[in-house]
Image (cartoon, rainbow, N blue to C red):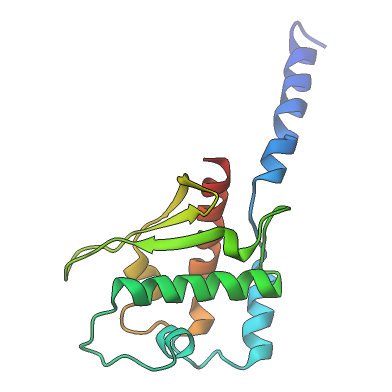
Amino acid sequence: MGAGQGKTRRAQAVASKPSERTVACEALYKAEVWAEFIRNAGIDGLRLQQYYLGHPLASSQQVSDQEYETILAGLFADAVTVGAIVLPDPYKIEDFQFKVGSHTRGRRVDAAVVRVDKPDSLGRLYNVDGLVGPSGLYVWAAAEAVERIAESITYALIG
């Protein structure tokens, strides 16, 4: 072994091993579990607005901030309930809230994922309008949204 190579290998081995803090503060996304839920629930033909708001939106109707929050909270709750998003102990669905700021037509809509116990610790969810589709994205196509929600939850946990 050449000079310094042993230290390099040990450093790489240590760096690749996740710390307890990292594992304890990560919301894991399981794509296969989400896909199975959509298939088995028979909701793949529904649009997000219809499923989570209880009614379809007219094509000219703008999605309100509160409606975006309801859709995001519903996606999150379903994903956690079926095991597509795994929260670290002791966190539960109720420990997080989605806050969408006011927006105007033609501008991107962003959201914050806020920890209820620590409101200054939040994750960001950018481009919500594109992510959940103001025109009514189908539930089966929401996998990216669920994955990004899990990432935002992780940021809120480590924040």
